[in-house]
Image 1 (cartoon, rainbow, N blue to C red):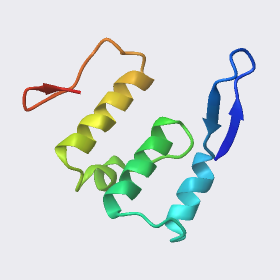
Image 2 (cartoon, rainbow, N blue to C red):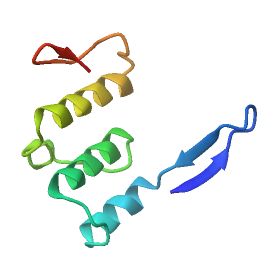
Image 3 (cartoon, one colour):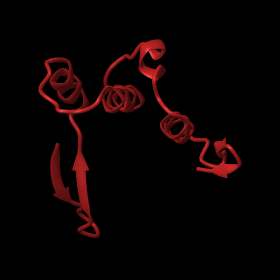
Length: 91
């Protein structure tokens, strides 16, 4: 991950090397739970950096995390007006 500041407004920004993050995860170099690893792989896939098999990646995620993944996919696809509803709560 690299940090910097935006040219126009100086806002703090970060860039993630998704391929390196997934490689570190696979090599056992990132201390995280199984669920956190699945979320990292899914985030890397949404970012377009790596292909992920959705079967193993989605299994074991709780409702909150799977709803977050669904929101991220909708956002990445440009459907920002759509919402994910879980047990009556909007996320």
